[in-house]
Length: 123
Image (cartoon, rainbow, N blue to C red; front, side, top):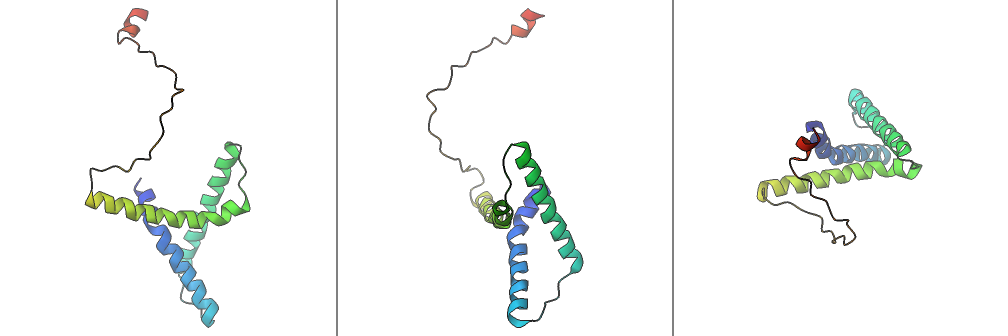
């Protein structure tokens, strides 16, 4: 759970750092110092995430296309916005919950109430 929260906070800054390093290199021709170990861990993490998404999509009977692979980093960066929003709401209004509004489903079947002693009668 902690790793998921930490990664949500780190996605956008990491992507911004990577894009900025590539932009500096492209515009000036000077490659900024990039820690090789960190880039290796980043690459392995991205590949593992793409692979797990592909496996999950296959299990669900869905296609995992090149567009999905290319859109994933943008989606991951948006997780940072959700993290900032959640942290802000937790600090400012800790007892408020953002709920998604849903329409009432009038076609829900009626639920049958089972007596609490039903298990004792069967035994």
